[in-house]
Amino acid sequence: MLRDQLLTPTPADLTVFLNRHLRTRDCLVQVAGLAEVVYHGRAASTADVGAYLLLIKPDGSVQVHAPKGVKPMNWQPKTDEITAFVEDDRCVLAAARRSPQELVRVIWLEPQVAQALEISERGGFMLSGSEKQLQELLARQPELIEPGLRVLSRELPVSSGGIDLYAQDAQGRYVVVELKRGKATQDAVSQLARYVRSVEDMLLRTRQTVEVRGILAAPEITAPARLELEARNLEFVVVQVPQSSAVPSIPDSLFD
Amino acid sequence: MLRDQLLTPTPADLTVFLNRHLRTRDCLVQVAGLAEVVYHGRAASTADVGAYLLLIKPDGSVQVHAPKGVKPMNWQPKTDEITAFVEDDRCVLAAARRSPQELVRVIWLEPQVAQALEISERGGFMLSGSEKQLQELLARQPELIEPGLRVLSRELPVSSGGIDLYAQDAQGRYVVVELKRGKATQDAVSQLARYVRSVEDMLLRTRQTVEVRGILAAPEITAPARLELEARNLEFVVVQVPQSSAVPSIPDSLFD
DNA sequence: AGGTATATTTCGCTT
DNA sequence: AAGCGAAGTATACCT
Image (cartoon, rainbow over all chains, first blue to last red; front, side):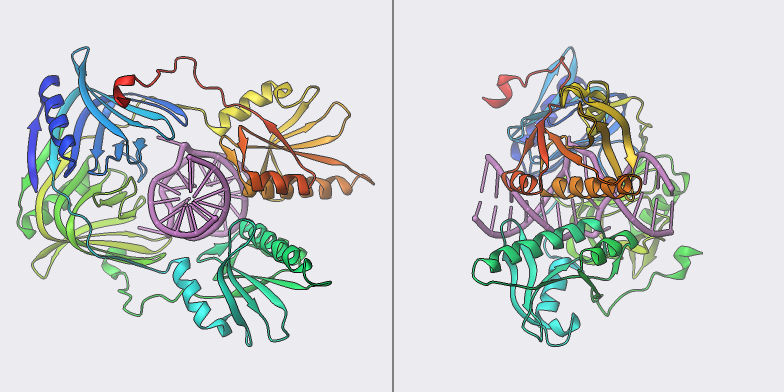
């Protein structure tokens, strides 16, 4: 698991260490210590000398962590090329992407610990409560949205994007349903309105008059979104994402 | 820098190690090894046994990394409470948040390495190329958008949200400018349209007739966004985010 | 605490 | 490669 480790390495040693373990692309490489970080690409950034933690995953993704937050201070998704080299008597790690063209450089001033860890491909990972699951549920049980609703299509591709659920109500009117797993915002209303218009345009090519209903289905909705929804003559329906029944309640001890 | 380290610790030792270093809240704690991860909160997830890397930052944020991607497999922003304890002869790390109420549990089956690292508050960090910078530039030089444009307000708070730039053109017409640092999408068009309507509503209270222009200013725009923009009688203007002149071009060697 | 918008968003999917 | 939308988005800002 801990395949290799260096303590307070020299620039040359760290460079060799990094290149050796990066080449195999089968372990997670990390370095902690004093460094400077420079990024240039979609934007540009520089971080003064500080104690940071660098992670390089087997897929070539890079992240430099400062002491706060989930988000890295600097990062790079799956890179095209990663190299370490010595420059001005310091070990420099350079990670580059081609598209978009961008580059992160980590200049090590005082590397303290370097490790190569074996990290396995994650076996089973299951997430429940996503919008996709909600969509599957409601496609099977459209009556949870409204009695008499029949689902015609899921992810119906319209001019751009896809309509979550396309349906017909008990009176035969077409219905566009936009789902949100969380609280619905004005954005969701805009999206729904856009889809309704697309469907209206589509139907107008074959019919004279159309009435297309738009339903925003979510567990909650913000007050401004509700106002805009009503102003646009669209509807809101409460739907609950079913949580697994085996919910372990958070032990009291953790909140005492 | 490397304050403390344990190799293949027993459940009890790891528990003590974690609690000791978590309590001080002054170093980054990490554990690598075989573990199971369970999350329950806004959604729910389970990860089968695998070799993962756990990071706990001094601010209480938690992330569990699998071998791929910048994003952690599981995470928790700044937690309210973190504790390690022994359960069924295994060390379990539980990190909980109150709002939203959620919990991550990492069950260690074979912890291999545990470390406590000193990570300093990042000193200077400068990012350039953000939308905020673009806004500052264009507020100073509105002629980059259109000759004769005068900026009345930045981040003007409207019914909901803020208008990036609120201005008046050479003919005295009011102009709403929505900025994007990257390619503008349909979302941006919806946003702009919403703001234009808000301003129209606002002005209609004091005036009889109003003509409010809406300008989407971005380096690029997607084709569908452009169509919708034109359908709504809104405008598009190309603006470039100025990149720092000291741009280090990506060395050829990295792409040979 | 609620609402909104940005992000070097990332990521996955479809065209 | 481009476009689109979801995300347990995270994070900052403002009311």
